Length: 307
Image 1 (cartoon, rainbow, N blue to C red):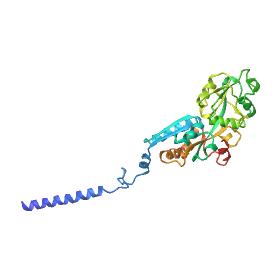
Image 2 (image 1 turned 180 degrees about the vertical axis):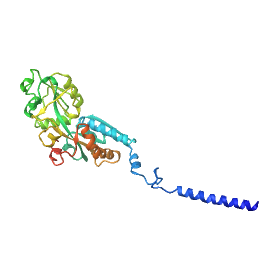
Image 3 (image 1 turned 30 degrees about the vertical axis):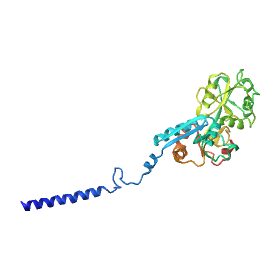
Image 4 (image 1 turned 135 degrees about the vertical axis):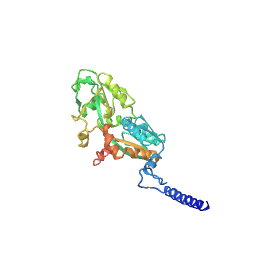
C-alpha cells in the first residue's frame, strides 16, 4: 500500500509540473495565433478607437454637404467622437472659429485682414464649382460675364435683353456674410456692388429652392446642390466640369477651406486628417460633386485669388 501511494504521489507531482508549464506558456504572446495578442502594447486600431471628443464646425453652406458626409463616415470609424456641422455662411464660420465658438470655421473665401492676428490656420479641403442658375422657364442656355454682371447689378431687368423670354428678372441673393456672394461679386462683378433689388436667402439650398419655384429667377449656387428644378448656365459659353476648371476656361469656382485656431489637435486634427486622406479625397470628394483639393496644385494663385 505504501509503495502504491508513492507512485500515485509521483504521478500527482508530474501532473502539477506539467500544469504549471502550460500556465506559464499561456502568459506569453503568440504572434502567430489567429486570435488577438495579449501584449499590453496598443495596436493602431486601439489607438484610433481611443479618439474621443466633440468637434463643432460652422460656416459655409456650400461646403456643408461635404462636411456632413465626412462627419458621418468619420464617426462610424470613431464612435467616441461627435462631429456637429452647421451652416450660417463663411463669415459666421470665420468669426466663430476666431472667437473660439467653433473648432472649425468653414469658408468659401480666404480669411480677410481682420483675422491676421487671430492665429487662424487654413486647411484647403476641396475645389467647389459654382454655377449661375435660373428657373427653367427663362429660355436661355448661358450668360457672358458682362451679361451676368449687368443682371446682378440691376442694369438688365428683362430676360429678352439676353435672348430669353419677355419676362422680368428676379435676382436671388445670399447675405453679405456669404462666401458664395463674395466669390460671385469678385469673379463676375469685378468687386462692384450687387443690386439691392431681389430677395435674400440665408443658405445655398434656400437659393436653389427659391430660383426653382419662382418664374424668371436667377441666382448662384455650388454644383453639389444642382438638381432638375433649376438650370445651370454656361458662363462665357463654357459649362463647368473638372476639365474646364483645370484648364482655366471655367472661372466660376471656389476654394473650400476649413480654418482652425492654431494647429488642430485631438479629434479636430483627426477629422481634418481624415478629410485630407487619399481615401476621402480620391473617392468621396468627387462623389459629392466637389473636386480634390490638389486639382490646382500647380496654379496656387487660384487658392488665394478668391479672398
